[in-house]
Length: 108
Image (cartoon, rainbow, N blue to C red; front, top):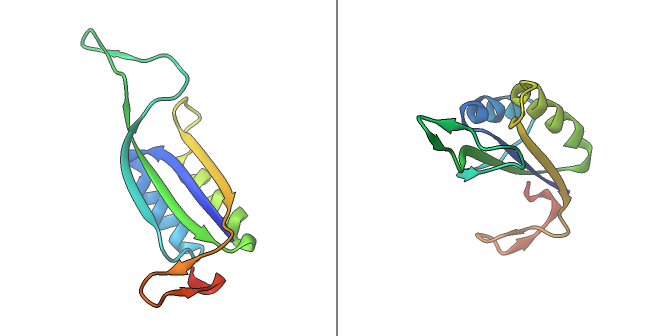
């Protein structure tokens, strides 16, 4: 199993979720947040913007689904501009359902 964490601009997060559901993703967590990349901070009205509104989309998928999900995220979130976001894919060693106290790879 793999955990996919996508950091995207807030204005595309709902469309990203809609698109990854089309490729079979079940559960999704959406975290509304603030963040900053390594680039320069823009000025608006004479004030430097320290953080941008971003959303973090988290899901866990089977290894075989990673490329489909990453492609779906890229297709929606990519504008070619700095600040489009990042996608991180990490291994999930174990998963537990709190309700049933079950350990299973089929929980996703």
